[in-house]
Image 1 (tube, one colour):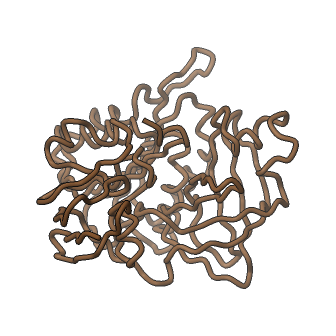
Image 2 (cartoon, one colour):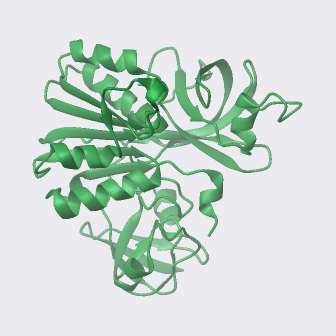
Length: 347
């Protein structure tokens, strides 16, 4: 057993042999930044002040050799080899939002594009399920594997959560939605009973923020951002909010009507859709290219912003690098959730 000390909070906790730092922290109720929990997204990146670790298996895009050589580590894969001291922000959490396992029923499956579905899951009426808009749940499969999906709606009295799921060809869960020939007993079918665990993750709105708010999403990364913005509207939030949503084609703007309605809310709301692969037949007249590049073109400085980025790891990492290095964004004001697929956890 080794001891871990967090800076700047000076909180200490113990880590068992072969246990990751993240697992040990969560076990004793300490919440630090994290996302995928499998070394793929980089959300739990921290710095070693003293001591040694086994870095564990992870994606190079989540933690590069350069970062490792400069004291970087991932809390979700690193295992202490001595007493260590690390720099990592400690996030407050409430008891009511502690993760729990429970059954749920697939209430509705709506195919909204050729590779995106909106799933509504009904939770037990006799069990409370509190979460912060932006967090995610794990669907627990019978073989012990998990699939993580962000909740795209704010907490509600109906005890229903909404998931936006993109087809990952060859994926056990998503093939059962989009490929009728993939399974004789599809996992995701209306009225089926599933088990889930949540809420999980540290992607949610920081209420003590005073800056302008910039949201950047790619693909179904719009889901948790939708939940956050709808919650802000329900609380009559009136500060400036800017949303950039990057998709491949105009047809992928699958909740466009919902977003347009946000312009009628108390928010000082600006929406910029960005299409990366528009065809002539699309007759697209809006912005084109990479979504983070559109922000770079529009914003000379992000010094007075808090940025929330959600979507592909490539987009999230590109946005972080560009905004912090070239647009004066404070690194502590960049909050992200990088969506990964099951294969991303493999080296």
